[in-house]
Image 1 (tube, rainbow, N blue to C red):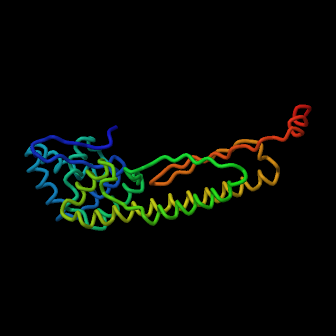
Image 2 (cartoon, rainbow, N blue to C red; image 1 turned 90 degrees about the horizontal axis):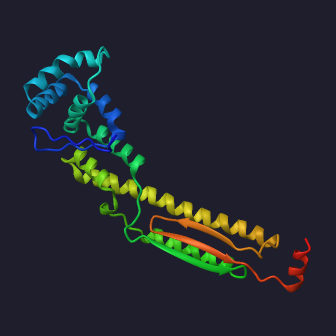
Image 3 (cartoon, one colour; image 1 turned 180 degrees about the vertical axis):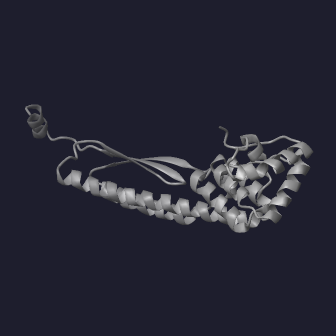
Length: 240
């Protein structure tokens, strides 16, 4: 099943909507009051012709009572012209659901960094890394261009008459998700530091340890090089 429904019919307009919204859109369609429903059917007639209009008009009561089910193509065409008849609150609900399901804010300037340290300097390394992540979070800028084309097309379909509102919602959601990812990376860095402290206290510093952290703007791969074993330790380990 494709992510979008794109219809090339009599209308030059193409309808895009996310698959995850299909159930909600169908419910909103069957919740329309009589005035809005009449407007929808008039628009449907203009888009798809008299025969399609008469079929939908005659079948609607049976659809609503679940006596028969509309075909996927028919209901998709109907909800495809639904947004102008939805309330602002309904469209916001749809957009927020889409963003919760699909939004992955990552900057195009995403970078990968390898950090090598040793057991004498690992604490300073983690402290420095935490400060760098906090700094990156403060400087992190959300841009609509960082959003997937799929989300932007669905957003345009839902809010073509009020794109300012849609973009405000988009940016707000992207910022919230990005902030969560930054805070999670900071938490992981502190948790890794605690684990390294435990290893050090148990004299496990003769082993190499590696960790990875990911934020919306960068991935960090940290490697702690092992200490060299004293000759006596090598002999002791040999006979264990």
